Length: 152
Image (cartoon, rainbow, N blue to C red; front, side):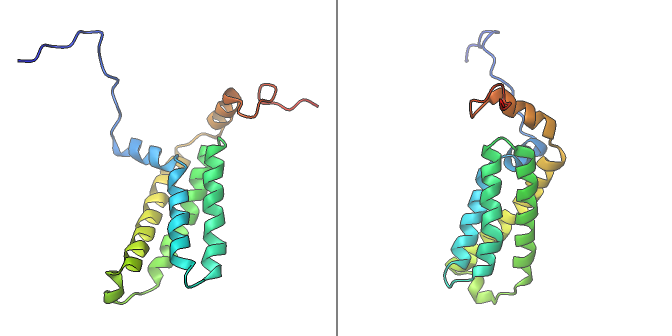
C-alpha cells in the first residue's frame, strides 16, 4: 500500500477540456508554420506559384505575429488562411489511387491541419482579448523600450 503524499505536495491541476486544448492550439505559433511547410511541400514541385505566393506568406506572418505578442490577431489570421486553404483543397477531386500515395498523405495532412487550425484559431480569436495582449506585450518589454512606449 502506497503512503499518501503530504498535504503540501499537491500537483497543479491541469485543464484538459476541449476548450482549453483549442485555446492552446489556436494561440500557438507552431500550427501556421507547419501548415506553411505542408503547403510548400505540396506546391513547390511541380511548381505552382499561385498557392505558394497566396498561402505561405500569410501563414508565416501569422507565426511571426504570434511570437511578437499578438496572439489574438495571429489566431484570427491563421484561422482565416488555413480554413480558406482547406476549403479550396477540398474542391479539387483526386482519384482513389492517388489518395494512398505519399503526396496523398501530405495533402490529407494539410487539409486536416487546415480544418484544425481554422477551428482552433477561430476559438482563440473569438475568445481572445486584444487589450490583454497589449498589456502582456508592455509587461514583457521584449525590445527594451521605455515601459513599452517610444521616447520622442
